[in-house]
Length: 141
Image (cartoon, rainbow, N blue to C red; front, side, top):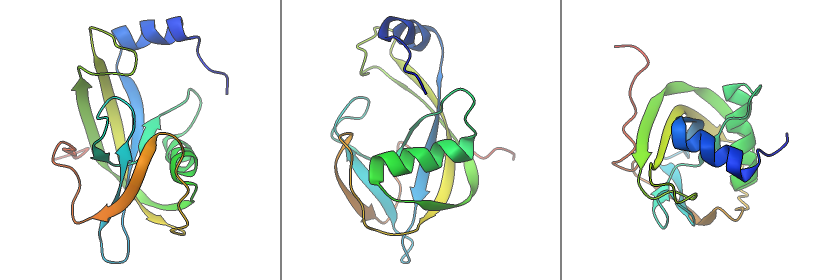
């Protein structure tokens, strides 16, 4: 997968929402795995792992890829549980218009807990609940 040139990506993010995937990974005690973010948005906050979907990539493949990249583990997808939409003033591109993301949220089981973080996170641990900001909306009511 080739990277989008930075100026092209800045233009896209400045005008359109970015499609993401997020994972709620639970242990056998039903606690949720969160990572401490090292970059914007939500720098220094505990958050669910995930990230952008590539063109031509299925949502399921995207979440498996992101978890492998960020945590170094494989997951078993239990299903998509809804979506999460947010807008962030602080963003990695320092755009005045901010960052608008739309995330499809999956529930998943870790295939191991031999976690090896990439540079996007400064730590990981299990919590009793998801962050309050992560308001997951159901696909259907």
